[in-house]
Length: 225
Ligand code: AP5
Image (tube, rainbow, N blue to C red; front, side, top):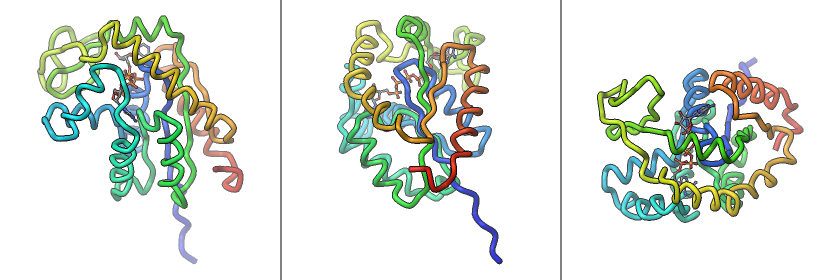
């Protein structure tokens, strides 16, 4: 008798700007050997390389608005065709609208259920985190507090993210409430939806996220969507 293949672990991270989606997605993906797919990173790389996508995205991102559903769905549909996503993936920054969430369900048809983790953080904490954030101007990674002026990975100069200015952050939060918050409702009736408190030290959030994903993975196969 052939061995049954383990079920893929398909994780979606939700949460407002600064909630810690990228930080936690990175940790979870590394620990579990899964690809982290961050649409923000894909767009920033395109901007950095001056590709046609980057030219479309730059102005939109710098204004704190969303790149069109059509473009984003196309990017994610292509990325999820790659073989490295067979054991699962961690999606960070997608979906961001109900249209994208509906498209993701269609893309996922027969690929196993989604485990959706929503990270909850009060707005005043988000504002503080984004005002304080520095990233590497060369490799784009978020800088931990120990890096004072240079990137610990590549030596690049630490800079503000171009969309972390006060006014743009307020716009990003408005867009989050208008476009992205409704997908919490879209997913919240599913047995594999989990909410965690993101207003705790990063290691504590990591532990909560592991526990939430473990609990979601125990939901019987027939009850998953
Ligand atoms: P994206 O890069 O996805 O930005 P975002 O959703 O606004 O999220 P952030 O990266 O700001 O925050 P995060 O939740 O990942 O937190 P992080 O871990 O970095 O998207 C950027 C833009 O691209 C969008 O505005 C849009 O224009 C476009 N875009 C992307 N996807 C799109 C889509 N699907 N559709 C349309 N447009 C799209 O942490 C933030 C800071 O807090 C860091 O400094 C970190 O070190 C710190 N931190 C993290 N956790 C903690 C903690 N527990 N305690 C203290 N500090 C913490």
